[in-house]
Length: 80
Image (cartoon, rainbow, N blue to C red; front, side):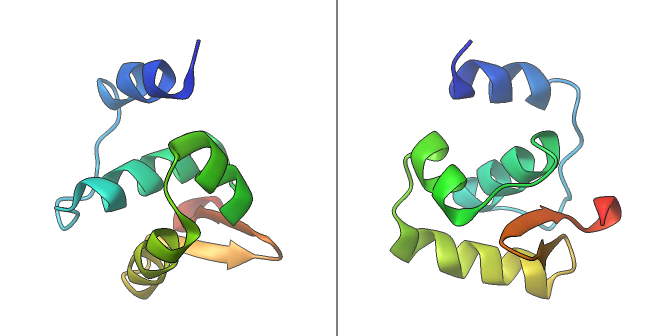
């Protein structure tokens, strides 16, 4: 199963925070949540999003308290 199929199946059973409106934010949040944490390199290779685009998304999700950085990984805030 590829990443898109995994996220598609998971999205059917996963409630995203209502404040997330941008597709990249939803995708990154969902990936971090279902993978129990991910590095920037994991996100870049799995989601095919350039690092220059990932960092603002990660900053926004962190500022909103939805994810946290633990060492080199980003994890869902409730999972840390």
